[in-house]
Image (cartoon, rainbow, N blue to C red; front, side):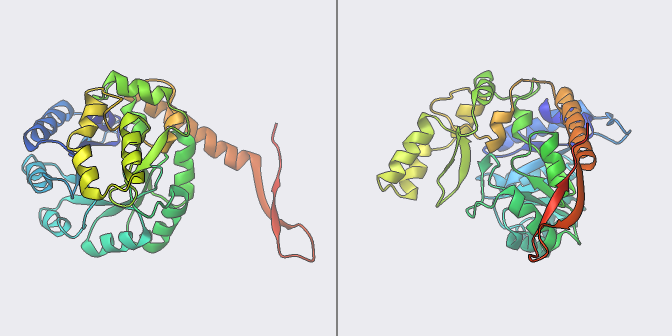
Length: 321
């Protein structure tokens, strides 16, 4: 429902395949396509639903082929070699975006033939890059690397209109938002998970498994157990066995906020109410307009030398009543 509402509002709604059985994935795609068939966005454009597939996943190949069979036109891939599936999908004239966490990865994406890259900073929830580049640093670096030849979408820490304005100022052509939409009425996440988001403070997320498969999630008993095992010298096979399969489903969809994995972004403290997708998008647009007005109305940018003897400069701020 969340993806469909997003698509009907004129955005790209993504059906996520992470940890999802192929049969369930197919059902979700069919339901999403049925709910958006003949729907149009606010500017008369067709409502578009795509898929997001982590390539390291157990069912990645089956999910790619299922989405292709079901007529999905837009694929977002991540956590793997972009050249693994991009050429195959391009043969069928599909649009492919790949998530990158360094400018070097963005260049590999370009070489693989993707249509756009999503530059994901370490603020992002869920699986992360090992280098922990922040969105503020990563996005302009990726724009410098490939932005003149393909669109760059910013991801990580984007939760309101201010962060959208910041991402576009960094050179991004669009934004990818996840955690904010998890806390909506249409989201299929369990109410316990949504409540955990609303109660979270700015220091309540943690990056787990930094040296192997980094994941940002809310702190809870599960994350503390992982940290304790690492401090005690546990190696990846032991950690993987303890985590097992289905921890994300347990936490986000079944509502076990103690033993489950509660993936969410570092911007979680800025989410303080459950809204509909339509309300979130309306609020994002209002906040974006307010942020851009503030930048253009409240700041003047003549570079005035602080001192004739130094090359340093200061911005002249003029407060507007």
